[in-house]
Amino acid sequence: MKPLIDLHCDTFFAMHENPKQGNLKQNSFSVDIEKMQRGKVGASCFALFVELQEGAEPWNEVCALHDLFVHEMTENADTIRQIKTAKDFSSNDRLGAILSCEEGQVIEGDLSRLAILGQWGVRLFTLTWNFENDLAYPNSSDKKIMGNALKPLGLEAVSELERQHILVDVSHLNDGGFWDVVRYAKKPFLASHSNSRFCTSANRNLTDEMIRALASKGGVAGLNFYPPYLSDDSLHASRIEDMVRHLQHMHNIGGAEVLALGTDFDGIEGDLEIPDISKMEKLWEALKKADFKERELDMLWQTNALRLLGE
Image (cartoon, rainbow, N blue to C red; front, side, top):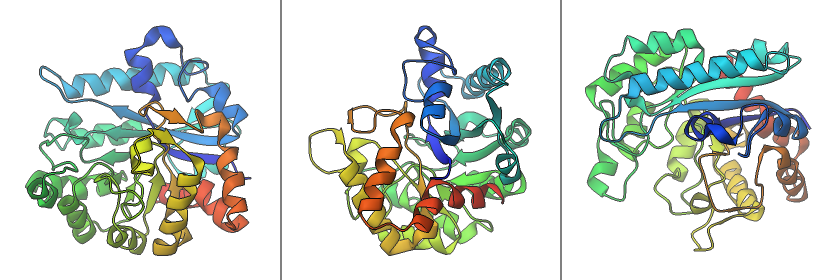
């Protein structure tokens, strides 16, 4: 089993909001250095997540999260380091930390700030979270909102993100915005933590047509462990059997090249059969029993994510 690359977790937001519950080395959340080591993890993608609310100052908040990230990287430099490229990962004898931004409003409409994020080593950037912002519209149960196009600044942001070598992340984006990214993106993009809408009807999930388009662009979709994205039942349980079902369907629709993992650990709740990053081998074993080939598992676990990091 190759070292895992997980494309999304909210651990730094959790630590920032709950500083008494631990640090990156050891905490009460689902991801920390000790759990990563036990789970044979190669790298986790840590999101600088800002929740828009009245009175929020998104840029100041994302800067504070980045300061925490830098502090933890310094404090734990003997065991973890920041990964910016596939080359960094391949030469790494320590755990890896990939940096992402979740919520396009962190730049407060100022595209020049994307260059600062690039200097920080941010490699993934979601255009939205769950609220409308200066760039785009989020997924929604409202069909009108779901069909809205990217805003003009959002179209500019796609080009500028590519220029800064930051991957456009369409998780949380509405359907109209997704198809604009398909039309205007010149480089591969990804849905770092999104599942199959055919398997589970949540608006946050991807339709079969989206999965095919994502695959055709060289992108990946990272499997999200959030219960409502895995099953339509009301048990609020994140079960391995549902993870396997989603991955099988996404494989059938987009091929093994589109598969990745984006657990959303520390940003989700519910009854989690895989409660933290140390227990990921349970999914590997379940997929082997479901007749996934070793090569396909390697692609899901690491290779596909590394390909994107090489962009």
